[in-house]
Length: 289
Image (tube, rainbow, N blue to C red):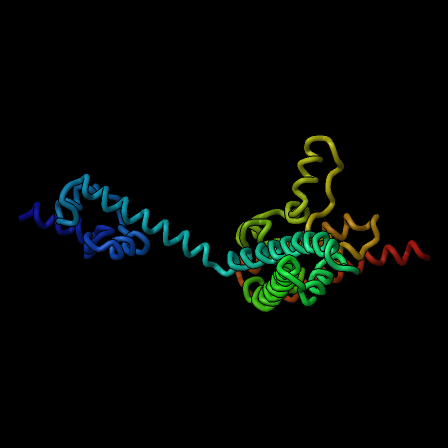
């Protein structure tokens, strides 16, 4: 009786206590949520308590459940809001690139069939509105119409990002603007990854080719990457852009950490950035005087 009691106590203290080993969802849930106070010889306890028939059977069930847990975690991570923003901004870039490539093709093709064909997306949209005469012109005008559809989808994706990114990363969206914030998250591989990067890395995200060229000794060190598109950097005179980029990247790094770890809007960091930018811009006024 003592041996049976010991077996029951050990089973009761196990991570798989009360779990139906035949039901994968129960086993997976136990692995995710249950605990055991002290380590134990779980294969032996599992066979003694009836959780598994043999040690080999225990390891098979454990392997199946842990693989299932990993798959669920990967699926949850992929469906996270920041990952969806990454898909959106990459899809937007794909639409933009493809629309311009097809517009160029339309311009060349339509130019051989029609007079006064303009280049670019607007030119392709004008071609799409022409009344085709014959099957060849129909093909050109329908190809041109696809450019308009891609351009419309690009704008719809932009609107989606501008609408939903502030809920995912409120401080980044306010500081950088939703589109640039989404692009930085995409370049970093996610909000958590961006939050873990130092400001110097945030500063040159998007300038990887220039950075590799610099490390190879073939180019100067880049001062900025994707953040150059923001007025804080682009709107600063060239000799002060390095300072502006460093200040901006430093606050962006802080904003990413607040968004990831707290998820709440912090007005103080935005005020700090405005003060820092004002100090940098004041140099221009001093120089003018």
